[in-house]
Length: 164
Image 1 (cartoon, rainbow, N blue to C red):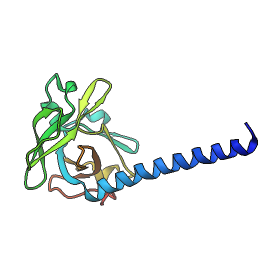
Image 2 (image 1 turned 180 degrees about the vertical axis):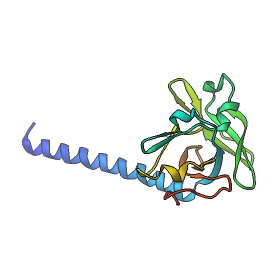
Image 3 (image 1 turned 90 degrees about the horizontal axis):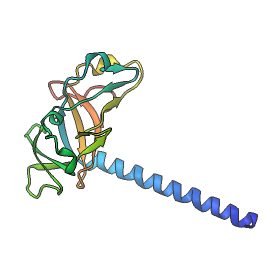
């Protein structure tokens, strides 16, 4: 392959990587800006591992209601209260057709099925701000993909710098 063709191939590969990265970032930003807000109650986590460096280990109360066969399903259907707090309705392989319910893509990690991530990262040195966290705030898009956008206290007030 000629040096000119090699340069063109490298330039095309770099442009493709940048385009895919930009599209992914745009999708995330769009979900954060326009996704439906859903609040999930946090479940207790072993206190010895709640705070480790600059992240908090997370677990969600909804996860404890998931049946043993949850791995065979794609979505958790959630009922959402007027305050935005969600509770498990059922599991299904399709998004819920009725209004007032939200479908959240289930996540599988190390054989464990969950509705959300297992950690929340924050600025180093700000752990004390998040010790009052009782809810995870998610932005959910129309496909059921949920992004954790912040942590809230028992009064549903956003904690820390993650205000969006």
